[in-house]
Image (cartoon, rainbow, N blue to C red):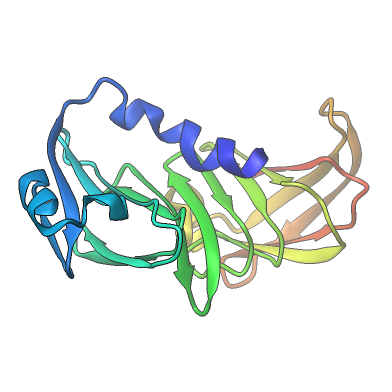
Length: 207
C-alpha cells in the first residue's frame, strides 16, 4: 500500500484535469493510433502510451505476460507486466520497470522521492524502500517500511538545494516526531550516512 501510494499520488497534480493529446497503442513493435491497433488485432495487448497537453508522457503495460519497451522523452523504459512509467522532464518521474536485471520502483518530484532500494537514479542508496521528503532546510528520511538494519547514504549531489552543504545534524525521531537520538555529521563526498536500525520511525536532517 505504501508503494502504490507513493508511486502514483504525488504525480496527480501533474496530470489530473490535463487533456490527453494522443493515445498510442503497441502494434508489432511500433506505436500507432487506435484504428491501426484494431486493424492489426493487437488492441487487447493493453500496452499504451499517453501524451498529455502539458507534455507529460506516460505508458502502461497491462499485458499478462509480455514486456513493453517504450520511450518517454528520449528515455527508454522496459515495462514488465503491470509495469508503468511517467515522465515530465524537470517536474516528475515515476516508474515500475525492469532495470539491471530486476524490477525497480521509483518516484521523483522536486520535493519528494520514493525508491525501493539499489536504484542508481535515487538520492537514497540502500537495499530497502525509503521515502525522502526534500525541503531547502530539512530532509526527512522514512523507511517504507523498515525491514532490517543497514547503513543508508543520501547523495546530496542529487538534491540541488543541498549540494553544497558541508555539515548536517541528524535526528532520529519516533512516529510523533519526538527526538530519540541525534548527531552532527561532517559531509564527505556529498554524502550523508545514516544507521537505520529500526529504533527510529524517521530521520530529520538539518543544515
